[in-house]
Image 1 (cartoon, rainbow, N blue to C red):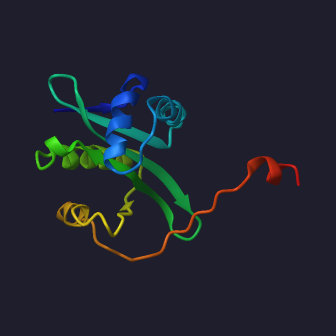
Image 2: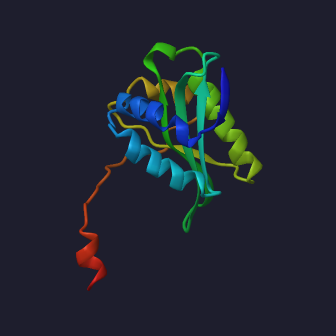
Length: 150
């Protein structure tokens, strides 16, 4: 297995894997997002590929600076093809992201894991992550055109 920075050509396979997490995305929309993220130095998008050049997992991490907590790297997305789980793919992706974060002087990693993803909780704990809180997440769609003209 090889871990490398994602490329725009990886977008179709990354979109397939994204659907595994319950976040369906077209290859085109994922490619557009990926293109923007790859242009930002504070973002890391890595893929794991097997010798046949098939992408079997990806991770997205971001350097963040919170006013109340300082700098850290947050894992914003991690997915491994179900057929390749328990083979070290997720561990490898997270490890490489941690190395990226350390190279930027970040000494704190964080991740949020949905309570319904019970299989991911022991995974992160095995990697040394400790649960620090449980919270509710809220979202609101806003009309950009209306708000920008006020």
